[in-house]
Image 1 (cartoon, rainbow, N blue to C red):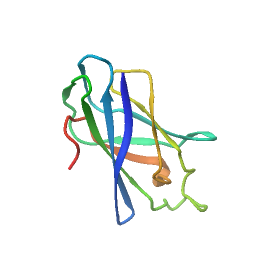
Image 2 (cartoon, rainbow, N blue to C red):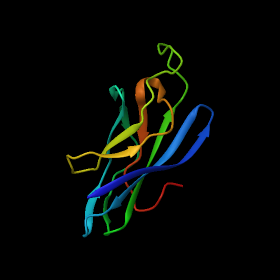
Image 3 (tube, rainbow, N blue to C red):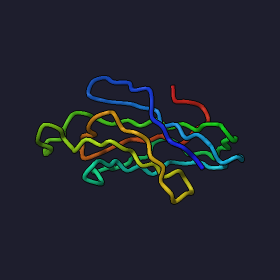
Image 4 (spheres, rainbow, N blue to C red):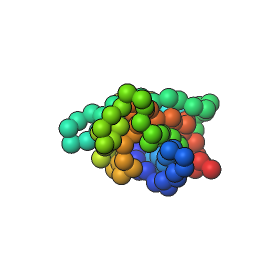
Length: 131
């Protein structure tokens, strides 16, 4: 079983970056690799989420108690056709489906709206945190 968390908000020029951390709590090593599935959600349900994969995936092994990391990048500048006080509804949860799994785990989302119709750029999982 993997647990998900988000941390390390970086911001600049209308862009936001956070680190997704998946912690292995299964009691054994976990072999995985690639990109997680993502879905923003709030009190009213699913919020538009479009994931764009960046980088090259590699197979990794997460030891019991170990961690894997990915970087999320999104814009807070609305697209031309996004109107209102926020470009998209604000999420309170990010549902994460680890590679090769079908069950989602949740991480608290406290980073505001994801503009450009919910576009999030995502790096593949790695055993070291993104720089």
